[in-house]
Structure formats: C-alpha cells, structure tokens
Amino acid sequence: MEDLLRELAPQVLGAVVRRFGHFAAAEDATQEALLAAAVQWPGEGVPGDPRAWLITVAARRLTDLLRSEQARRRREDAVAAWTLPDEWLAPAADQPVSGADDTLVLLFMCCHPSLSPSSQIALTLRAVGGLTTAEIARAFLVSEGTMTRRITRAKQRVKDSGLPFRLPRAEERAERLGAVLHVLYLIFNEGYASTSGPDLQRAELAAEAIRLARMVHRLLPDDPEVAGLLALMLLTDARRPARTGPDGALIPMAEQDRGLWDADAVKEGVELVTGALKRGSPGPYQLQAAIAAVHDEAPSAEETDWPQIVALYELLMRISDNPMVALNHAVAVAMARGPLAGLHLLERLQEPLMGDHRLHAVRGHLLEMAGDHAAARDSYEEAARRTTSFPQQRYLHGKAARLSAGPDAPTA
Image 1: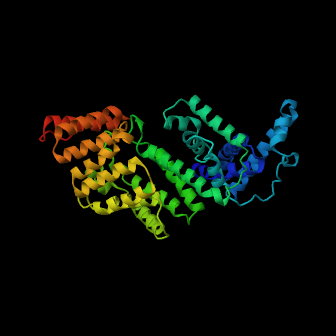
Image 2: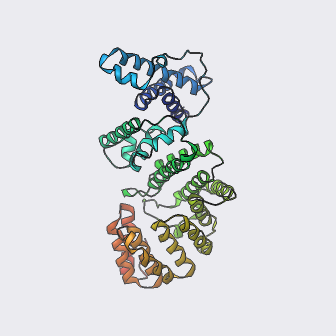
Image 3: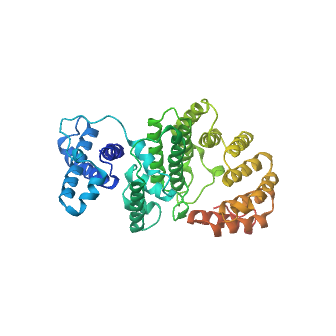
C-alpha cells in the first residue's frame, strides 16, 4: 500500500497542478487524497484505477478549497488570477481521468533553472519523492524550520516564474533534463557518501535517488544519459554492503569483500550501460557508469583493468571540465603506471582542490604507495582535518597512526 501511494503521489500531484495550476494548494489537496486512501483502502479495498481515484479526490478537495477561498472577498483577486471559474467545478465521479503521467513535467518544474541546486533537491524530494519536510531536513542536517522555509520559497519562486505546466520545448529540453539528472545525481551522492555527520552513507537517500532515476528511465527509455545515470547509481550502490564494517568504519574498495556486492544490481547496471553506449557518442553519466562497471566486474582489486579506466577518464575529461574527474584520473594513472605518475598529475590540482579533503587523502595514498610514509602521514592528517564526515575522519586518522607506528602496526 505504502509503495503504491508513493509511486502514485507525483502522478496525482502533476495531474492536479496541470489542471488547477497552483502548486502549493495542489500539494495540500494531493496529501489529503493520499491520507484518504490510506484510511479507506485497507478496509474497502484498492479501487480498480487507484490513480484516477486519487486524482478525483484531490481535485474535489482542491475545488472545495477554491470555493471556500472564493467566498472570502479579500482573496477573490488572487484566486481569480490563477484559475478560471469554470474550472472550479469538481469532476463527476464517473468522469475518466487522463492517462497521461505528469511526473516528468513535475520533475522539470522542481528543477526550474531559477532555483538554486539546494532548492531543486528539496523540492524534488518533497513533490516527487514524497518525503516529508522533516525527513528532508534530517537528510540534509538542517532544522525542519529551515527546510520548510527553503521549500516554501522554492514553490513561490516557481509560481512567480509563471512557468506553464508542460514539458519544456524541444530547444530547452536537453538543458532542463540535464538539471533533472544533475539533481538526482547530487541526491544519490549525498546518500552514498555523506558529506557530514556521523554516518558514512544514508542508504534511504541513495535508494530514493535510484527510485526516481528508474522512474525517469521508464518515462524516457531511449535517452542514453538517463540510462547511464541509473546504471551509475546501481553499479555504485551495489558495493554499499561491503563499504562499512560492523562498527560503521569505512572500508576502501581495494579491501572490500566483493562477495558482499549486490550481483543483481551489478548485472542490471552493466546491461543498462552496455545498451546506452551502443547508441552513439557517450555522455558523462555513461562514461562514469562504464568506469564503475570495470571496477565491479574485476574479480579482485589487483585484477582491475586500470589502463581501460584511465582511457575512460580521459574521454570523460574531454567533455567534463571537473577537477574531481581529474583527481580520479590521477588515481587511475597511479594504479596503471605507478604512484609518481599520479603525484605529478596532482600538482595541477592544487589550486582548484586545495580546500577539499579528497585531494589530500589521494596524495597521502600515493605517497604511501611511493614509500614516503612521513609525507603520507601528514597528508592523511591534513585530509582528516578538512573532512566533515566522522567515519572518514576516523579512517584517515587511522591511516596516519599506522604509518607513525610503522609497517608492522595492526591494521584494525
């Protein structure tokens, strides 16, 4: 029941927004319809067309609200501005509901270019993901009041933009789809590798990003970058069961028990990216997924095809001017050609990544590979000072301590 309502929620909200054109009121009406379903369906049974049932109930709720507001003189002008009187009538109970799925339109609306990335993420999780404001606030470690204000401002900005409720025109669709995919990518990354807080990862946030990416893939099955992003998420999340020990400590990929990796997710991810790459010039998500696939298909860390990963990163750098991609490329080069080659590449990343703990962590790793343990220890400590993730701090301090204690020190 819960999964069904969660899946239908954005479709219902999208349909009501399309009809009435007022995001916040439509969201309230949709929530009331979902609540009514949660109360009635367990006893009366799920209707034959649950989506149509929810849309009808939500539309009636919203119609009642509009009628009430119409009766209040001080709101008449505002109400009249965003809907027509003949649209205030509730649909007849037997009136068929359009079968169109407005979820993708809703996603595009939540990722409106006038919104900041943080507002896009919050609004997407609220309107499409169905998460409560309190859940989103917990996920991003802010107070519920702060998140409420952020979402309210986002809704108001969307409303003020006058954006029509429809898919963007063809000429702007690629850019807007890019924003949608980027938001889902950011949500997944925050779930897979939390940037702060006591936990290394937030599985529920990563799972939500995968669910939303699956939904976009169902709506746009022929888009190779959508398939690439879903594949990237699946191939990365497949390693999650092996990323932490019983105490929540970080386990680097080279030391993970690959028998714990989710084989079904790896298989699905490989099939997705393989199919996407056959469709033409690969985009950044497809290339990242291809890199993840090479890792996941290696029987062991030692048997990883690092030259292939280097080549894929070099393709990725041609289309993505991102210092994090360059950092990962340096790691791959070090693994393929030796640590000194990787350290040489790191010199170019000093300025763009000086404040990022990952630069110092990678330098520590490569210096350790090169046998310069004193410099490696200093880099690990520097990385630990810069990260706000407690598990990463513990891991980096542990690496530094073992180097201080000597090569025979215990590893745990």
